[in-house]
Image 1: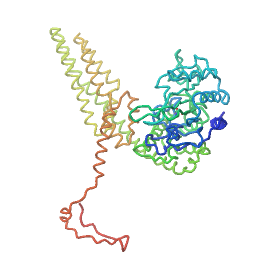
Image 2: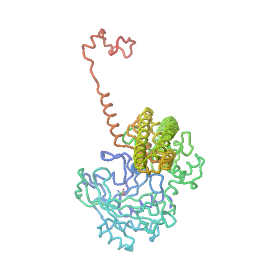
Image 3: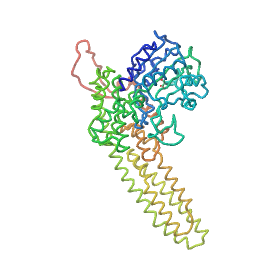
Image 4: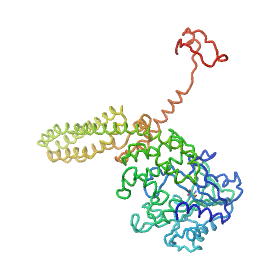
Length: 572
Ligand code: SER
């Protein structure tokens, strides 16, 4: 079954069960300030669940476009997508657990014909009712597992709203995939088991203060991931090999001149580019524009991440437009907004990609220069300290051992301290160029520098026979502390001046074993907002100042003409 067929069969099945098929809503939730982007099929039905509105039919079904910004960093592994399609059936105070479970099982085993022995069920801890219904459809009790709130309680979408315990169907892709550990099972992160369907028993309305109030009536909200289901049916190891995403993978591979399936790092980059290219196309088709805030920032971040990974694949020229064209041809028959907004999508992508390419080229070049410079300086610094220290240690060793030990300890501390503070000082000096400072941070974690410090330590030990390991460890730890986190100011400047999304800095930092001080970054952002607010305040020039300019009154001529040549006689 193709992805298109799964969609069709699903909606048809629930139509047969008395559901009204509703089209997907926009990725921009309508009148829902709690939510940035539509993240589930139930989003457009929230007000039915809360009782604020009443649907013409209490049974609804849809195939919903969804976007989950929380999954951006996970994209690239086998399971996660930012943009995906969610098939769902919904009951607004009509049927409840029994029908939801029975129909889900009927659909999965009889319409999709997935082998029952590969299906596993999870339920909320004490949900014996759901357990009973799953037993009734014939699932052996050892394949029904109980999990807590993290896994089997869903919602709300956003900060407040409908939520409830849930029950999931997981599909076992087989022992050939994943970690191979004996305890591997549903909810293992390794990718062997994929959650395909989530049945939420929506009973509560979560308040801003965290209280969960009972909804007027219990509801059903289900979500069957289209891409994951396609992977299960088509016998593919991941969503990227299904007919929904494989053409995009093939296109990216072709553009980059790479073969998919040979090298994990390359594959991951190809997946990221393909997935993000599709997501970006859909976001723009729903009217989102790149910007530095809100939805526009999500779009910018995803687009730039795709561009960055494209570059890692060797794609130098703008390429995302070609990917968008492919998405429009592949999915335009289902989502006409793609076709309608084709020109806008292509021109926005191209402009944004070009802009980022320029930013990135400059930024990365500065970064590389910074790394080289810092390495050289740090190595030099350590070499400078080596001679005097070993010389002194040799002399000290000739003296009384206890005395020598004390002297060497204090000397080592003395030496480590300047190294530490010199490096810190260099970071400050170089923070004029934030990218260079980032480079320095990276250089400091470079193993070669530690090697030299360790060598220094062993020379000392050999010369004095005094164990100064403790002192050196201290010194190394100090260096490490200094070097392990990128300051908020640097991240902010990279973001503000160079247009590096903070998440991208975080990703590059993490690749180099560094963390990012986001708290300080937020403080910088707040200061920036303050400055922006201050600039935005219009002021009035007081009369006295104006008179001092001695400018004669200006005659208003707007009733007679719309343009007039004139002369600037003074400026305040
Ligand atoms: N709202 C639930 C989910 O997103 C089921 O549709 O998983």
